[in-house]
Length: 143
Image (cartoon, rainbow, N blue to C red; front, side):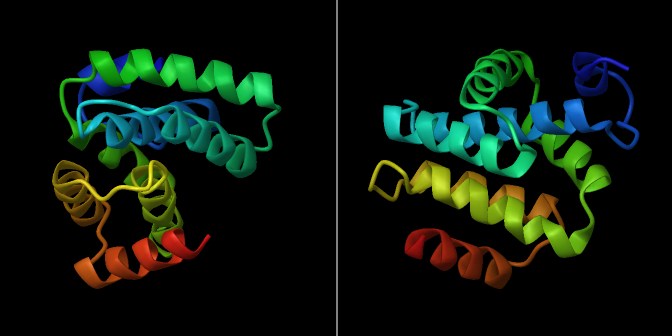
């Protein structure tokens, strides 16, 4: 099943790893763009997260980020990304996703209200509480 079919079709089934990568990448890009502009530090952070999480080389992570930018632009809503990741990632591992999202939001050294709102929405859609998100933000800020 192709990733865009998952975005635009009925509720996604459990994602194979390549589509999970793209869903997370697209969500990371959406967070970076939430304030109207994805900065160079945010894009670099996305690539480092993809490298670390999936064992990718730098060129592979960059290619995935570029593909994720396209997917993010085409996606009708954030719910599709979070639903796909919720199906693919066990609850106990989702705080790591939110921590990664916070690390992108904080990568440019600024807190933005639009990023905060989107992260609150995403955390809830992933089944995490505001407390879980706040703790993930604190860990991301220290990293």
